[in-house]
Image (cartoon, rainbow, N blue to C red; front, side, top):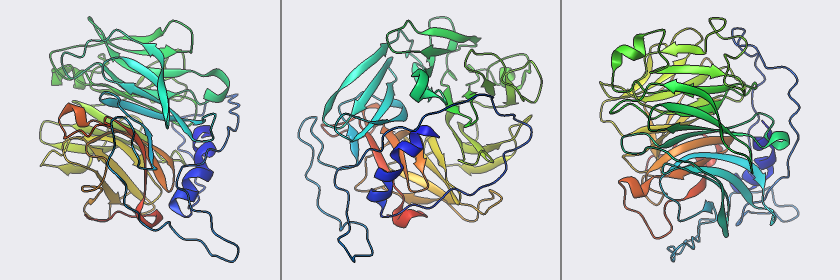
Length: 386
């Protein structure tokens, strides 16, 4: 999409090369939204990038010791923003005035921020939310035509319900999907672009598993809506927002670049799980973590699914074949010398993802936490064990 294209050059340079996305047909059940005209954005450059000299075939930059942060100043070249509070959503929006990476980020307490390295965050919206349970401001996705319309979508818990809001800079946030049940637990919800113009919404069960199984309830579901909150064209049941049912407390949603695979992570009753979502059903558990590392955001690469974890440091990656079947156990990366506990994750391209940390919500925060940062896949592919 547009934001990934805008960041392609920067992340490729940091990673030392990029793989291209496979050209596969989109699934027939979900139809594309018509008349999308996204514009290409600027191509930011990351600090610390390596520029090969003439005749040099190119390589990853040699590892260098990074000084510890001093206050809100973080010396790690991959850190985009610092001193935030429990980051729940991240989305790249292009380049800042200095040519670096700019992004939107959400905090559980209710702020939508525009962030960039070495620049104070700019508050785009301050929302009144109820974060007394596991809810608050917990999800973020951008319009497919963000470069043109600057629209962002957020998932929030209010005093009476859970809902999706549409936000335009300088305008009052507009509720577009309301009445998602609220309960003593199961209020967290997450958002993602389906990469075809619609917004995917994963909702919690409001502490009542029966609601997740009820086709007439919006709780415990994967929903698909258009920019006005109406059922998107091509949904499994015409006139219904519901794509699949059976979630408990979702942590992340992600769609592969070719739109052939959609994943949702969930804190199920038996353990942490990830499902591959198919139209009309949630599907079987694709992988389960009985030890409950706190699965959150994810990135669906062509050969790997990476999953952020909010209870154990770093992230875990599952290698997969072309059909999307996992071929081995998860490999853990950045468990040490990383950014600590991670929450949201948004794939930039085949080499890297944008992440947000949640160290203030149960980790061991450093002075610059919580942060937004870029993580680069080891050797441009696969995971490594620490």
